[in-house]
Image (tube, rainbow, N blue to C red):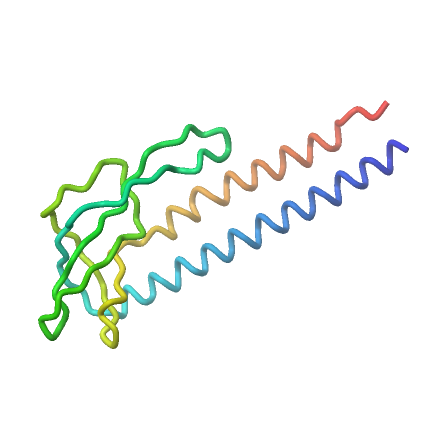
Length: 147
């Protein structure tokens, strides 16, 4: 009976590790695709008009923290005013009137992103944490007392 339980635990571990790896790879690829768009699109200066307030998830026993996503406006190539919201959150509330650099789609300037490259930070933090958790849980299954 004890060996069957360990086999089930190892199967659950493999499924969890594969799911976490797939989700991490998907998020990283999405971020890198956005960075390629930012690199290829024209850049402009945007003015912060306000911000949206939210909370971090508090996942992994981390405390929930209040975050702010700047809302901005910028003038497109034909002099038309466009509005946007950054996908990059901040701890401090952005000051209205401050300047951000944005990249906008030349074919549809309503599509814009704040110029930021978070994939290196994501990759640098995500891989060691996931590797440690996978190794620790694998070790725990091995020493788990079953009677």
